[in-house]
Image 1 (cartoon, rainbow, N blue to C red):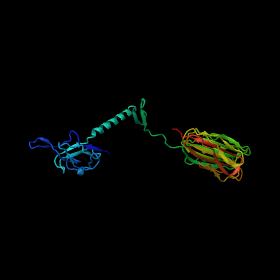
Image 2 (spheres, rainbow, N blue to C red; image 1 turned 180 degrees about the vertical axis):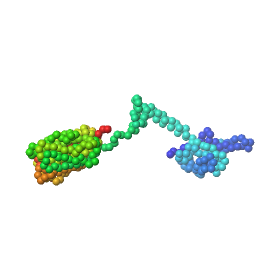
Image 3 (tube, one colour; image 1 turned 90 degrees about the horizontal axis):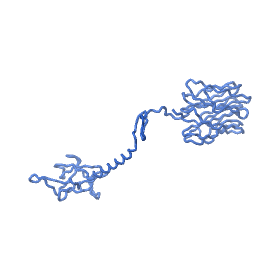
Image 4 (cartoon, rainbow, N blue to C red; image 1 turned 120 degrees about the vertical axis):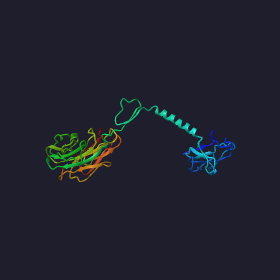
Length: 361
């Protein structure tokens, strides 16, 4: 806080009564300053114009009784009670800082600046509903409760491995709620030409059935879960050994972005999910993989992804397996190829990236 100047004003004089009752100027009177009109404490923290302390806080009037511009009072003090005595006895009069006018002028200037800045601002409405017929420059601060502030997020996963048979059913993930988006990846041994019948009711093909390596089929599906929707069952054109995995996501838009599909043909352990270019920030990208090989026991998910499900098949040979993982994509742009590695090799496999957007309410 600033110190304010005192004394030297037109009203800063010491007067006293003469013998005949007349008022006279009191030359060389000693003035003390107090924080109250009576009683209170003496203010001694006074400095002169050179910021040197004034001894005992006592100021002496000049030969004409004028209280000189003696310096400054304590920080932040704009008024003091003055007494023409060392002990504060006798009448006291309120003495205002002499620079108050300068301070008021500064405040006035600032108010003018504020008014000029506010002149271009319209009406500000703070309410849960939009104002009627707003004008140019009007501002509406919406205080309504958002219909949903939940983020796009992984919910849960589940999987199933079938023995040789005409169909496979996979239980829905635990904790799934209506509106969740579910991705399914299916792999089956098609060495006798087996194929997948139309998908379960309510499910959409994201990647239609693909024959890989001449003896393996894989496909990817999606659905927005509705209350009471049953566990999905896939049927086949003939008995087959199959494996399926599901991953559910909260607050995901069903309009998903499906990338290019990788089909492995060389006998290797790796399966790629080709890069996609996401179209908006804040997406989550799911990587789905399917293959068939001898008995797989370990799958290394791609670095930078979160493993959601690795489902191994049944049997001792020609066993299908699937992997689901995902990662956050904070900014729009290329995601980069994501490679999963099995602990066995084969000449078939499928990989794809699927971009999920947050559902708009």
